[in-house]
Image 1 (spheres, rainbow, N blue to C red):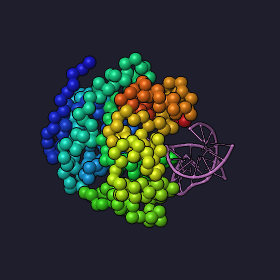
Image 2 (image 1 turned 135 degrees about the horizontal axis):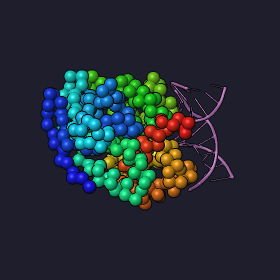
Image 3 (image 1 turned 45 degrees about the vertical axis):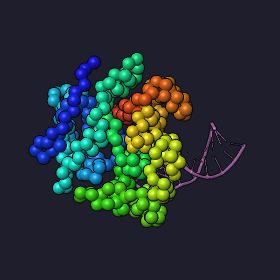
Image 4 (image 1 turned 90 degrees about the horizontal axis):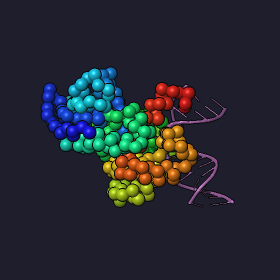
Length: 299
DNA sequence: TCGCAGGTGGTCG
DNA sequence: CGACCACCTGCG
């Protein structure tokens, strides 16, 4: 069991720098389906928008020869489009830097060879603490949809109806969205999700953001899967275990479930992973998706 | 042309 | 309740 490293903040060359960061891999964090507003750069860093700031996030390992996600290193954040990097407190929270992922992984892998193998694929995954309204909008759009198109829809929604934000655009507020019609949103090409979004925006504009899983589930277009994603990524409810088609596949393949037995899977996750359910889901999700990339014949 | 993509709401029995 | 099924859109 290794020692926990203290994360420290400093500035260097115009960038915000966090040193002593472990268990961090940009591609695994930004490309594991939890967020839709980050894109990779040639050098492996990611650029995107969060907290009203356009930024580039880069990880430099202290030991460049180490496997991704296994070495401590530093996280560099640069503001883009003329803005500065923003608030260190925001980024520390957003990137979940105070969380001890070494401990989480140790607890999940103890006595579970499936998790051990899964975590071997995505040991640098972190769960971002994202804006609640953004996660609500994003995951309503995500249903029965694919990632490139989800990103396109969110981008068009921001550009067409959002507030200008340091060279880019933030998502429209609930009030703005509530004032629009399905026809207004036609250029965004949300399909039948446009109605869900407007109904949910009206509800949020009137009653405020949901404060519990129950309130979340009452929103239009928010079923069990989407509610669990929003709870996990937008409300910090880390025992959430969203069950989507990929999780159904991995639970069938690795834990012997019937692909349609979602109740059984949820009960198993509660029992086996407990408060770490959300982390377990992310490792399993990333694992099965990576495997299917390497073996297209397995779908 | 058709199935499918990180599901949900509506409608049956 | 649980099992179906239509549903916007875009791509192979």
